[in-house]
Length: 297
Image (cartoon, one colour):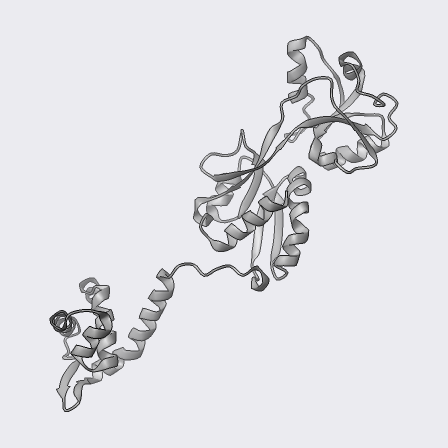
């Protein structure tokens, strides 16, 4: 450690050139240094290593035994350092064999990951994707610790301190089974409130949501008879009962078993965002994954 503290990188680069060229002039030309500068470096190197390192000979300079010992370890060390400080290599998805971990709810699994999956498998067949349950309270820590690469969450209440990219804007629609007798046309507000509603409550057991917030200023209340924690279960419930639900439009598009109509009350939508930590922001593989997902939704 004492010798390391006394060295700077230029001295090691000079030594490598001298051990290759065995000539101060040629080493200076190779490094684009002046000959006196190379001589000064050599004097410092001799002091650090307590060895002459290079001695005058009939055909240039001859390395000492200590210099011969240094030659290969020094070359390997400089090569490793060059790799460490070189720009990150371009990411080749066709040859990649890495595993990505993303945090997603069942909603974002269906609306974000599913559209991206076919293209992901085609472009990067050697990669793996692990989807873990999204817990808003843990996303920031998981990303910081490297437990997840990406997370998907609504923009307005996404954890602070993470990079984000808005993927799309979402709106709510009224949904029931195909052939539902009360959804043949858009219901009035009074009819809407008399329908039996199912609500998604991610925290569990809640019977109040953004639709109820929109109804309250109008002095109205709807009938919420079922509360569930996941969106995908709601689709099955709607297809097999006369219950209705206010659901994100992307979740129910192209679903023949369900009838979608515009609600009689304006309910604010939201933006869906992709989140990641600063530590992976410039990583070529992560950049590729983010661009692929953003281009798929």
